[in-house]
Length: 61
Image (cartoon, rainbow, N blue to C red; front, side, top):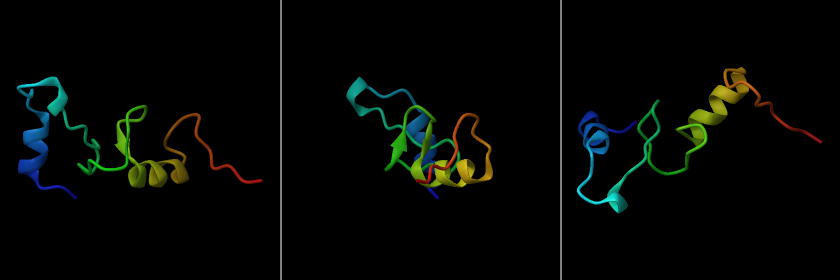
């Protein structure tokens, strides 16, 4: 879980467009971020396993 100050800093508009840091809306993690879902891989997996993300299901073959 990221500190509140780090999350607040990421929400501010950066001076340059290349400095944008995309963070998970749920936990604030910046690595393993998926733009399509606006969350990190860990939160994505948790919510997908619970069935909270529409259209996503665990594949097995």
